[in-house]
Amino acid sequence: MTSSRTVAVSCGELTYTEAGDLGAPVLVLLHGWPQSRRCWDRLIPLAADTHRVIAFDLPGIGDSAGVRTDGTKHRIAAVLHQALANLGATDAVLVGHDIGGMIAYDYVHHYDDASRAVILDAVIPGVDPWNRILANPRLWHFAFHATPDLPESLVSGREHAYFRHFFDPLTHPGHPIPAEQQRVYAKAYATPAALTSGFDMYRAFAADSDHNRSLDACATPLLYLRGEHGMRMTTTSLDVYREGLSAAGNEDLTVGLVPDAVHYLPEENPDGTWQAITRFLGA
Image: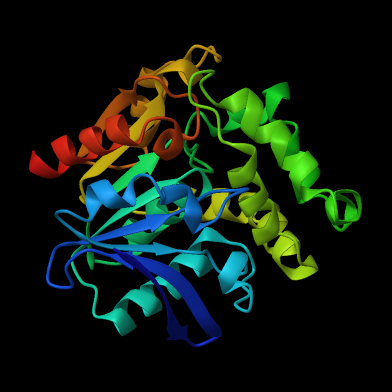
């Protein structure tokens, strides 16, 4: 059984979905763009058997739209740290997909209340192969979203049509994200403030990159997963991500692939994603 709740932070209230036993180990789920906490709907029932699951709408997005940040992953991590402290959620495992993975990466480099982290199909700003990813023409939207005001002007009122461009080509043909679910995500960004909050996370990439290059080594165990079929769409191998994360000082690193998935791992293959996470947690 899941419930929707709110938690106060210094800049407003964050909304989250909670499931599982309050006394169980804590699992925190952080969504990416252009999604909301609803992207975890199929994974939460699997995780709630053994964990207290907390799935946030990120600051500024969806039902957390009243909380604004500068879009830097360091600032968002600070807001989430405050939220978890207020919830009494300690020794948590952080699982972040896409931009949520960037936030989880920052979090474990700065806070010791996270016992482990899982990053799902994200490239970490400033960490190899970041520069190669920026040069990939398929990722044209990184620069577009970082442009002041223009993406809001063109996307506002057309969120569903625009977001489809990122959902349909980046899911396994056998596991598409249904149109109804895509409309749920479009609604989460349908206000001007929410749309800007999403684009601000891209506008902060340069600052994120500089910040991540200055980080010290991190001993927190880290699992890095990518979609098996997503790797077939790029010339960048999994070893390149492993080498980049290791060179950045992540001392306890595990990498792997989730089968039957391209980019949206928790929705395309929730069972395979959760199996990979549970193997990591049991290691």
